Image (cartoon, rainbow, N blue to C red; front, top):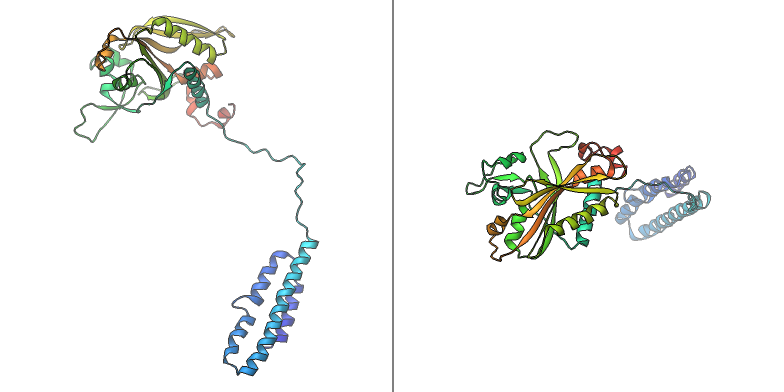
Length: 330
């Protein structure tokens, strides 16, 4: 190989380099493992010792020349093509960040208020048994109250399953589940998703969120319930709310009531936000309580209903629509 000719070719190629990124290509071409110079070094092993020593010295000198020339060219590029300077005084591009869903915001606020009132937060299963969802709550088969809950029943592959499975229609089954494993006094709330097989419209959906409440002791009274509910609703709606209690019926409480609210800021209609009442004494027997004189209240409130009133939302389906225009408002 003519080393002098190889040097001239290198110098010509190097002179044509106009951008720093092309230096890597020329380095590979002349110094890479498969370059002519590297192959020349490989061929020296077959030459006599003296000839090998002489040609190796010239080849090494050319290698050092090529390496140094590339380095100098790189330095020249750095000096003549300075990197773009970041001006930290310039305003940056504001990146859009994520945020909580409106239901999450309302649910977190509800939980916070009740925790300050001394309630513990517990959770229950969304797939429930017929026993806990109905039977233990004094809603046996053929009971007319079952018409209140349009149930989504599930098929079970477990043949030994004694109680049919379903998607829970309310969070009330946790009243029984919790009392089976805990002794009074206690006060709990149970946030969770519930399901009903019904047509969707502006105010109804097939799935929605509830917060169940339960407080049991020997001295709990209906007055306690009224005080706690009024404190809760006044905090959630910033004291701009009127509250009323009216008689109602739920099989697992007696007496039963519904809680209605009306915002003071507008001439709104009364809206029902909560079903409640004093825990039916038979529930204490069902869970095996032996202590006499126990009293308690239970309630269930709709998170979507609270959010719709609080944020003036007129269609419950917006919560699950994934409409960015809607979600960006919160």
